[in-house]
Length: 318
Image 1 (cartoon, rainbow, N blue to C red):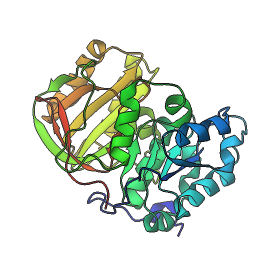
Image 2 (cartoon, one colour):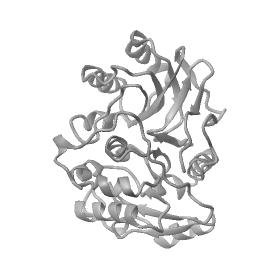
Image 3 (spheres, helix red, strand yellow):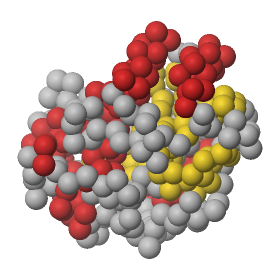
Protein backbone atom coordinates (compact mmCIF):
# COMPACT_ATOMS: atom_id res chain seq x y z
CA UNK A 1 0.00 0.00 0.00
CA UNK A 2 1.50 3.34 -1.04
CA UNK A 3 0.89 6.04 1.55
CA UNK A 4 1.40 9.81 1.31
CA UNK A 5 4.94 10.57 2.42
CA UNK A 6 3.90 12.57 5.50
CA UNK A 7 1.68 9.75 6.78
CA UNK A 8 3.80 6.65 6.34
CA UNK A 9 4.21 4.58 9.52
CA UNK A 10 7.61 4.70 11.20
CA UNK A 11 9.41 1.84 12.93
CA UNK A 12 11.49 3.00 15.89
CA UNK A 13 11.91 -0.25 17.83
CA UNK A 14 14.31 -2.00 15.45
CA UNK A 15 13.86 -4.48 12.65
CA UNK A 16 11.79 -7.43 13.82
CA UNK A 17 10.85 -9.23 10.59
CA UNK A 18 13.29 -11.97 9.64
CA UNK A 19 13.67 -13.34 6.11
CA UNK A 20 15.04 -16.78 5.25
CA UNK A 21 18.77 -17.23 4.80
CA UNK A 22 20.14 -17.82 1.31
CA UNK A 23 20.52 -21.53 0.60
CA UNK A 24 23.58 -23.02 -1.08
CA UNK A 25 21.64 -23.29 -4.34
CA UNK A 26 19.36 -20.30 -3.87
CA UNK A 27 18.22 -17.89 -6.55
CA UNK A 28 19.71 -14.38 -6.50
CA UNK A 29 17.92 -11.58 -8.33
CA UNK A 30 19.83 -8.73 -9.96
CA UNK A 31 18.07 -5.37 -10.19
CA UNK A 32 19.18 -1.86 -11.14
CA UNK A 33 17.37 0.69 -8.96
CA UNK A 34 19.93 3.43 -9.63
CA UNK A 35 22.44 3.97 -12.45
CA UNK A 36 23.12 1.98 -15.63
CA UNK A 37 26.15 -0.16 -16.46
CA UNK A 38 27.32 -2.21 -19.40
CA UNK A 39 26.82 -5.81 -18.38
CA UNK A 40 27.54 -9.12 -20.03
CA UNK A 41 24.47 -10.91 -18.70
CA UNK A 42 25.75 -14.35 -19.71
CA UNK A 43 28.98 -13.73 -17.79
CA UNK A 44 26.99 -12.62 -14.74
CA UNK A 45 24.79 -15.73 -14.81
CA UNK A 46 27.86 -17.95 -15.23
CA UNK A 47 29.54 -16.22 -12.25
CA UNK A 48 26.67 -17.20 -9.96
CA UNK A 49 26.20 -20.68 -11.41
CA UNK A 50 29.90 -21.42 -10.93
CA UNK A 51 29.30 -20.85 -7.20
CA UNK A 52 26.19 -23.02 -7.09
CA UNK A 53 23.55 -20.28 -7.21
CA UNK A 54 20.75 -19.59 -9.64
CA UNK A 55 20.51 -16.07 -11.04
CA UNK A 56 17.63 -14.02 -12.40
CA UNK A 57 18.49 -10.75 -14.12
CA UNK A 58 15.53 -8.39 -14.26
CA UNK A 59 14.85 -6.46 -17.51
CA UNK A 60 15.81 -3.01 -16.22
CA UNK A 61 19.41 -4.16 -15.70
CA UNK A 62 19.97 -3.99 -19.46
CA UNK A 63 18.29 -0.60 -19.90
CA UNK A 64 19.77 2.90 -19.82
CA UNK A 65 18.10 6.30 -19.78
CA UNK A 66 20.87 8.83 -19.40
CA UNK A 67 22.26 8.53 -15.87
CA UNK A 68 19.45 6.14 -14.90
CA UNK A 69 19.08 2.42 -15.52
CA UNK A 70 15.81 2.83 -17.38
CA UNK A 71 12.67 4.72 -16.39
CA UNK A 72 11.52 5.12 -12.80
CA UNK A 73 8.55 2.89 -13.60
CA UNK A 74 10.71 0.05 -14.91
CA UNK A 75 13.23 0.24 -12.07
CA UNK A 76 10.48 0.28 -9.46
CA UNK A 77 8.63 -2.58 -11.18
CA UNK A 78 11.77 -4.72 -11.14
CA UNK A 79 12.30 -4.05 -7.42
CA UNK A 80 8.71 -4.95 -6.58
CA UNK A 81 8.81 -8.04 -8.82
CA UNK A 82 12.02 -9.31 -7.21
CA UNK A 83 10.56 -8.97 -3.71
CA UNK A 84 7.24 -10.53 -4.73
CA UNK A 85 8.82 -13.54 -6.46
CA UNK A 86 8.51 -16.54 -4.15
CA UNK A 87 11.47 -18.26 -5.83
CA UNK A 88 13.90 -15.35 -5.28
CA UNK A 89 15.99 -15.72 -2.11
CA UNK A 90 18.15 -12.57 -2.18
CA UNK A 91 18.46 -9.38 -4.22
CA UNK A 92 21.76 -7.78 -5.26
CA UNK A 93 21.89 -4.37 -6.92
CA UNK A 94 23.76 -3.82 -10.17
CA UNK A 95 25.49 -0.62 -9.03
CA UNK A 96 24.92 2.70 -7.29
CA UNK A 97 25.19 6.07 -8.99
CA UNK A 98 21.89 7.93 -8.78
CA UNK A 99 18.20 7.12 -8.96
CA UNK A 100 17.15 5.23 -5.83
CA UNK A 101 15.61 8.34 -4.23
CA UNK A 102 13.31 8.70 -7.21
CA UNK A 103 11.68 5.39 -6.24
CA UNK A 104 10.87 6.22 -2.61
CA UNK A 105 7.38 7.64 -2.99
CA UNK A 106 6.33 4.67 -5.11
CA UNK A 107 7.63 1.91 -2.84
CA UNK A 108 4.97 -0.59 -1.82
CA UNK A 109 5.95 -1.13 1.82
CA UNK A 110 3.11 -3.58 2.40
CA UNK A 111 4.47 -5.79 -0.37
CA UNK A 112 7.98 -5.55 1.10
CA UNK A 113 6.77 -6.31 4.63
CA UNK A 114 4.96 -9.39 3.37
CA UNK A 115 8.01 -10.62 1.43
CA UNK A 116 11.13 -9.81 3.48
CA UNK A 117 14.37 -10.89 1.84
CA UNK A 118 17.99 -9.70 1.80
CA UNK A 119 18.66 -6.62 -0.33
CA UNK A 120 22.35 -5.90 -0.97
CA UNK A 121 23.98 -2.66 -2.14
CA UNK A 122 25.62 0.56 -0.99
CA UNK A 123 26.23 4.16 -2.05
CA UNK A 124 23.01 5.42 -3.72
CA UNK A 125 21.22 2.28 -2.46
CA UNK A 126 21.40 3.92 1.00
CA UNK A 127 18.02 5.49 0.19
CA UNK A 128 16.42 2.04 -0.09
CA UNK A 129 18.13 0.76 3.05
CA UNK A 130 16.79 3.70 5.05
CA UNK A 131 13.26 3.44 3.72
CA UNK A 132 13.05 -0.31 4.30
CA UNK A 133 14.42 -0.03 7.84
CA UNK A 134 11.86 2.65 8.75
CA UNK A 135 8.78 1.37 6.98
CA UNK A 136 9.18 -2.34 6.22
CA UNK A 137 11.10 -3.48 9.29
CA UNK A 138 13.66 -6.02 8.09
CA UNK A 139 17.44 -6.10 7.87
CA UNK A 140 19.16 -5.14 4.61
CA UNK A 141 22.84 -5.40 3.71
CA UNK A 142 25.38 -2.67 3.01
CA UNK A 143 27.61 -4.73 0.77
CA UNK A 144 29.06 -5.71 -2.57
CA UNK A 145 27.19 -4.99 -5.81
CA UNK A 146 27.35 -6.97 -9.03
CA UNK A 147 29.23 -4.68 -11.40
CA UNK A 148 31.65 -2.91 -9.09
CA UNK A 149 32.60 -5.81 -6.79
CA UNK A 150 31.38 -9.30 -7.66
CA UNK A 151 32.45 -9.18 -11.32
CA UNK A 152 35.50 -7.02 -10.63
CA UNK A 153 37.64 -9.55 -8.74
CA UNK A 154 37.72 -7.62 -5.48
CA UNK A 155 39.78 -8.99 -2.58
CA UNK A 156 38.60 -12.23 -1.00
CA UNK A 157 37.02 -10.73 2.18
CA UNK A 158 34.50 -8.93 -0.02
CA UNK A 159 32.90 -12.21 -1.09
CA UNK A 160 33.32 -14.13 2.14
CA UNK A 161 31.80 -11.39 4.30
CA UNK A 162 28.81 -11.07 1.97
CA UNK A 163 27.96 -14.74 1.67
CA UNK A 164 28.75 -15.59 5.31
CA UNK A 165 26.04 -13.12 6.30
CA UNK A 166 23.56 -14.08 3.57
CA UNK A 167 23.86 -17.77 4.43
CA UNK A 168 23.28 -17.07 8.12
CA UNK A 169 26.68 -18.41 9.16
CA UNK A 170 27.00 -15.58 11.68
CA UNK A 171 24.63 -15.77 14.64
CA UNK A 172 23.82 -13.62 17.63
CA UNK A 173 27.04 -12.95 19.56
CA UNK A 174 29.39 -13.63 16.65
CA UNK A 175 32.00 -11.07 15.64
CA UNK A 176 31.74 -9.56 12.17
CA UNK A 177 35.35 -10.08 11.14
CA UNK A 178 37.39 -7.18 9.80
CA UNK A 179 40.55 -7.84 7.73
CA UNK A 180 43.66 -7.55 9.91
CA UNK A 181 45.55 -5.93 7.04
CA UNK A 182 43.47 -2.78 7.61
CA UNK A 183 43.82 -1.75 11.28
CA UNK A 184 40.90 -0.05 12.99
CA UNK A 185 41.31 3.08 15.10
CA UNK A 186 39.63 3.94 18.40
CA UNK A 187 38.54 7.58 18.15
CA UNK A 188 36.46 7.66 21.37
CA UNK A 189 36.67 4.84 23.92
CA UNK A 190 33.70 2.84 25.11
CA UNK A 191 31.18 0.19 24.13
CA UNK A 192 27.52 0.34 23.20
CA UNK A 193 24.66 -1.71 21.78
CA UNK A 194 22.02 -0.54 19.35
CA UNK A 195 20.51 -0.87 15.92
CA UNK A 196 23.04 -0.45 13.10
CA UNK A 197 21.92 2.20 10.64
CA UNK A 198 23.34 4.55 8.04
CA UNK A 199 25.24 4.18 4.78
CA UNK A 200 26.63 6.77 2.42
CA UNK A 201 27.01 10.07 4.28
CA UNK A 202 25.97 12.32 1.41
CA UNK A 203 22.86 10.18 0.86
CA UNK A 204 21.98 10.26 4.56
CA UNK A 205 21.83 14.05 4.30
CA UNK A 206 20.03 13.99 0.95
CA UNK A 207 17.25 11.79 2.37
CA UNK A 208 16.38 14.10 5.27
CA UNK A 209 12.63 14.88 5.17
CA UNK A 210 11.99 11.88 2.91
CA UNK A 211 10.59 8.39 3.66
CA UNK A 212 14.21 7.25 4.12
CA UNK A 213 15.12 9.88 6.72
CA UNK A 214 17.68 8.76 9.28
CA UNK A 215 16.46 8.16 12.84
CA UNK A 216 19.42 7.60 15.17
CA UNK A 217 17.78 7.21 18.56
CA UNK A 218 19.26 4.13 20.29
CA UNK A 219 21.28 3.45 17.15
CA UNK A 220 24.85 2.77 16.08
CA UNK A 221 25.54 5.11 13.14
CA UNK A 222 27.66 3.82 10.27
CA UNK A 223 28.77 6.13 7.47
CA UNK A 224 31.14 6.08 4.51
CA UNK A 225 31.74 8.27 1.46
CA UNK A 226 33.89 8.81 -1.60
CA UNK A 227 35.64 11.78 -3.21
CA UNK A 228 34.40 14.25 -0.59
CA UNK A 229 37.03 16.71 0.70
CA UNK A 230 37.37 17.18 4.43
CA UNK A 231 35.37 20.41 4.55
CA UNK A 232 32.42 18.70 2.88
CA UNK A 233 32.55 15.79 5.33
CA UNK A 234 32.49 18.47 8.04
CA UNK A 235 29.48 20.11 6.41
CA UNK A 236 27.60 16.83 6.06
CA UNK A 237 28.21 15.82 9.68
CA UNK A 238 27.24 19.31 10.83
CA UNK A 239 24.01 19.07 8.85
CA UNK A 240 23.11 15.81 10.60
CA UNK A 241 23.97 17.31 13.99
CA UNK A 242 21.90 20.45 13.40
CA UNK A 243 19.02 18.27 12.18
CA UNK A 244 19.03 16.55 15.58
CA UNK A 245 20.18 13.21 14.20
CA UNK A 246 22.81 12.66 16.89
CA UNK A 247 20.30 12.90 19.74
CA UNK A 248 20.01 9.51 21.40
CA UNK A 249 22.85 8.08 19.31
CA UNK A 250 24.74 5.30 21.13
CA UNK A 251 27.85 4.84 18.99
CA UNK A 252 29.53 5.49 15.64
CA UNK A 253 31.27 3.17 13.18
CA UNK A 254 33.18 5.13 10.54
CA UNK A 255 33.66 3.36 7.24
CA UNK A 256 36.02 4.09 4.40
CA UNK A 257 36.05 7.75 3.31
CA UNK A 258 37.80 7.32 -0.01
CA UNK A 259 40.12 10.20 -0.83
CA UNK A 260 40.88 11.01 2.81
CA UNK A 261 43.33 9.39 5.19
CA UNK A 262 42.15 8.28 8.60
CA UNK A 263 44.81 10.52 10.14
CA UNK A 264 43.39 13.51 8.31
CA UNK A 265 39.83 12.63 9.30
CA UNK A 266 40.48 11.90 12.98
CA UNK A 267 40.52 15.51 14.32
CA UNK A 268 37.11 16.19 12.77
CA UNK A 269 35.70 12.94 14.16
CA UNK A 270 36.90 13.79 17.65
CA UNK A 271 35.56 17.33 17.46
CA UNK A 272 32.19 16.05 16.26
CA UNK A 273 31.63 13.04 18.51
CA UNK A 274 33.68 13.44 21.71
CA UNK A 275 31.09 15.86 23.19
CA UNK A 276 28.48 13.11 22.83
CA UNK A 277 30.52 10.74 25.03
CA UNK A 278 29.76 7.74 22.85
CA UNK A 279 32.20 5.16 21.43
CA UNK A 280 33.60 5.82 17.96
CA UNK A 281 35.51 3.24 15.93
CA UNK A 282 36.98 4.25 12.56
CA UNK A 283 38.61 2.66 9.53
CA UNK A 284 35.98 -0.02 8.84
CA UNK A 285 36.42 -1.22 5.27
CA UNK A 286 32.93 -0.89 3.87
CA UNK A 287 31.84 1.24 0.96
CA UNK A 288 33.83 2.47 -2.03
CA UNK A 289 36.90 0.42 -1.18
CA UNK A 290 38.57 -2.93 -1.77
CA UNK A 291 37.86 -5.08 0.14
CA UNK A 292 34.39 -3.99 1.22
CA UNK A 293 32.95 -5.77 4.25
CA UNK A 294 29.20 -6.35 4.37
CA UNK A 295 27.19 -4.87 7.24
CA UNK A 296 23.62 -5.79 8.31
CA UNK A 297 21.71 -2.50 8.43
CA UNK A 298 18.77 -2.53 10.81
CA UNK A 299 20.24 -5.31 12.93
CA UNK A 300 21.07 -5.07 16.62
CA UNK A 301 24.85 -4.95 17.11
CA UNK A 302 27.40 -4.45 19.86
CA UNK A 303 30.19 -1.95 19.13
CA UNK A 304 33.33 -2.01 21.27
CA UNK A 305 35.70 0.79 20.28
CA UNK A 306 38.42 -0.35 22.70
CA UNK A 307 38.44 -3.96 21.59
CA UNK A 308 37.88 -2.74 18.01
CA UNK A 309 35.08 -5.19 17.44
CA UNK A 310 31.54 -5.37 16.09
CA UNK A 311 29.27 -8.24 17.16
CA UNK A 312 25.82 -9.28 16.06
CA UNK A 313 23.23 -8.71 18.74
CA UNK A 314 20.58 -10.84 17.04
CA UNK A 315 20.09 -13.63 14.53
CA UNK A 316 19.44 -12.27 11.04
CA UNK A 317 17.25 -15.03 9.64
CA UNK A 318 14.49 -17.39 10.71
